Amino acid sequence: MLPSAGMSNGYLRKDSSERKFGLVHRDKLRKGGRSSKDLRHGHGAKVPGQGNPRINGCTEYDAAYFQSYSHVGIHEEMIKDRVRTETYRSAIFQYQSAIEGKVVVDVGCGTGILSIFCALAGAKRVYAVDASEIAIQANEVVKANNLSDKIIVLLGRVEDVDIDEEVDVIISEWMGYMLLYESMLSSVITARDRWLKPGGLILPSHATLYMAPITHSDRYNESIEFWRNVYGIDMSAMVPLAKQCAFEEPSVETIIGENVLTWPFVVKHVDCYTVTIVELETITAKYKFVSMMQAPLHGFAFWFDVEFAGPANMPNDNHSPSSLGEGSTSLLGDSTTVSSDACANGSNQRRKRAKSMETLVLSTAPEDEPTHWQQTLLYFYEPVDVKQDQVIEGSLTLSQSKENPRFLNIHLEYTSGGRSFVKESVMR
Ligand SMILES: C[S@@+](CC[C@H](N)C(=O)[O-])C[C@H]1O[C@@H](n2cnc3c(N)ncnc32)[C@H](O)[C@@H]1O
Image 1 (spheres, protein in one colour):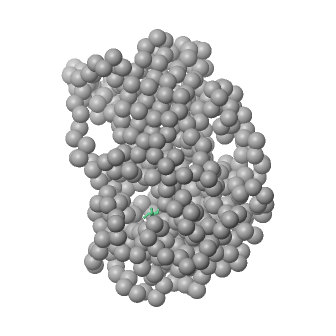
Image 2 (cartoon, rainbow, N blue to C red):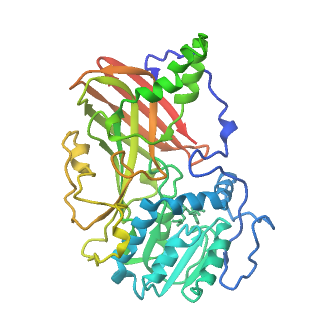
Image 3 (tube, helix red, strand yellow):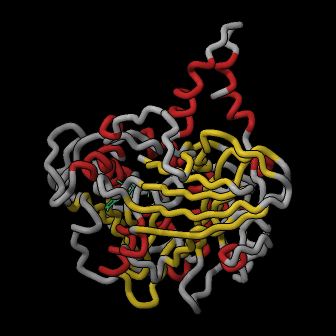
């Protein structure tokens, strides 16, 4: 947290190029990429590592991004996230009547799991598109499950591949940390604008990014206070560097409801049927919280949820199989979601969205079952004591980094108890 008066806090800045290719989430980026190919008949399919032609028009950053998804570990982590995967499966079967006999495109198919769910739900044809070489493995999985007549795996960017028909359904798991990190939603928008029939279905349909002030003394003590007495030695000289290293950049970790000081604020609500690529380049929101307790304020937490609602007038079947069990999903009406209007208006009221009780929601909120996204924490360098009912207000700007649009620049302005601060950070 830097004083807004422009005073330096004296901490060292790391060279940003040091982590040029490093994704802090899901996996590390690696260089690489391939041209687009229909893998149905194995034409030109090569195992990873045997040749690496560049994807047309792909930046060095994107090539590294797609290469990061060729690693099995990242897919294992996502698939093992039962909250994520089972909610998607539930959504597919909830909309089975909209999928049966229809054409689907899976934007970023990875190992092909969502494409296969769609085929099992009765899709006539599924275009499974991925620019990472993981698509080669997806093709093998499709073949092994005797689904090659239904699923066409395309190795290439959604922006580049050709699909010679309109599609009825778009499915994609595009959400990054803090929702927008990774900037993959723009590829879903591209797919929508290229191929989706009017009135077609997008799963998920809506997304909401939330923020809330948090207190987290354990984390602060573990990383900072620890240095004050190390085996009886005063190592407080380490404290400035420890603060720099621990709190300069956003941190992905799991918190619980007790860490949150008050109801969350909606930073951005996205309607996937109408959102534009330009709209996502910069997002600014003014927030205002009233602390519900006296506590040291350590920073802000961010999380998101996505909803699986059809376009207006599209019924869902609401007969999803056992996948709705095991507490893996969060249905609206369980009071885990917040009305965007209520929050955007600065109200502290926690209200349910005025949507159907049947709307399926994948939530990454601290009070819900943890997911591999966890929550994203933006810590202050120094905690600030707040009293009950104290107002915490300011503004937040999230913008795609010019250096690499998949990175997120975060500009946070904050005022409380008459003191103002600015914190700049980059999620890279
Ligand atoms: C989060 S993973 C999801 C994988 C899979 N759908 C699943 O649910 O397990 C996103 C995938 O999208 C791919 N991807 C991202 N942007 C893409 C684009 N513009 N064109 C094609 N594939 C893309 C990545 O390579 C990655 O495999």
